[in-house]
Amino acid sequence: MIARALVHALTLAFAVASAACGDDGKAPAKSPAPAAIANPVTEGSLTTLTLTPEAVQRLGLEMATAAIETVSRTRSAGGEVIAPPGGAMTVTAPTAGTLQAAGGGVPRAGSRVTRGQAIFSLFALQSPERNVRLESERDAAAAEAELTLAAQRVQRLERLLADGATSARAVDEARAQQKVAEATAAATRARTRELGNSPAGTGGGLIVRSPLDGVLHSVSAAPGQTVAASAPLFDVVQTEGLWVRVQLFVGERHSVDTSKPATVVGLGAATGPPLIALPMAGPPSADPATATSDIFYALQSPVVHALHSAGGTVRPGERVSVLLPLTGSEQSLVVPTAAVVYDLNGGAWVYEATGATKFVRRRIEIRSQTGDRTLVTRGIEAGTKVVTAGAAELFGTEFGAGK
Image (cartoon, rainbow, N blue to C red; front, side, top):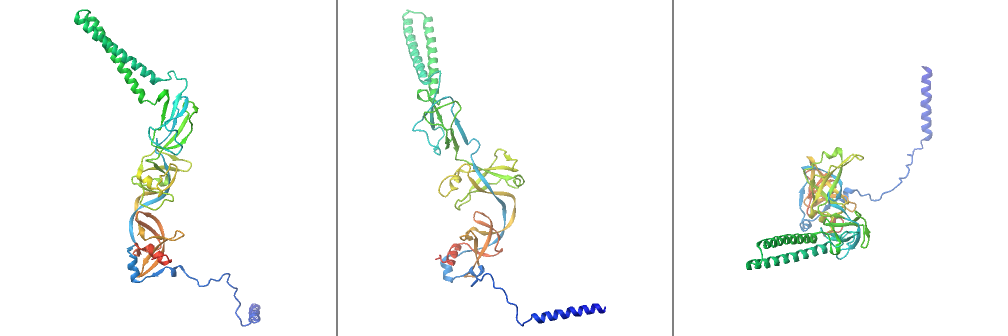
């Protein structure tokens, strides 16, 4: 016990002596800060804007209240514009032959064509009848001559029978021959009309026509070229009534309400009214490698032209954004879309009205936008009054570009 007390006493004495030797009456010096910020300003001190009552009236500001509403559940997914089944065709040569331009020449790839438009004239090789139409016209002329001759013979025999110079049997045989000539002439006339409606052109050439209204995707042959039977000549793709294919993970597909239309937006397209695509019962397609299955929507013709502000149409193979409706509904904070303004970096803001002439800019996080409603994830609370009409003017006023 005595030894232990002696050890404690020596330890305490050593600690006191060390503190006395190192204490010179001054606090230890602090190391300098690695960076100095002069006049620091927080984001909150920049977002309060106070106007005069006259300025508020001149800007025509209008308010709305952020509220919790029941909204339909949606999900954004990527889609691909495709031609509907049967909307893309490869036209091949019906027989071996030599190609010639039809009409004013062969259209270039990318040109718009109409259904039935002549693209090529194909002159068949080793044709057993090099000019079928001329042969048919010759047969028709011969049949008409035979019919005229038979009719004249009947008239002569009828006059002879009236004079008693021939028999009634001869007249009957002449009338029968006239009937045969009439039937032959009718058949040759019908054959000539049929050949006139067939793809055969003058000189025995076959007219190769476009089977669709659309755009020439590619041209695989040229005038003067000799092609084999079934050789590809050109590809035509339908540009009206296009579809959108959306690939979804199989676990998410059942949550999509396929009875409701979807909203389609072209990538980089200007903002505008929502573009509606109707659900379609497409072919059952899936990809086992990625565990995805496909759902299909049909773009309406007026919608297709509205997807690009420049007036162009979407093209098969183009990627688009699709807002899919999901089953069920949920509660979400909603503000008018007109209340949202965006800064240079794409940040979303609203102006909260904290008084008659005082407005505070609040950063918000947007979940989605549907028409004139914007769903907000965070940044403001329910019941907050936000500026709708005049929000852009407040933004310009705050940064020196307002009225």
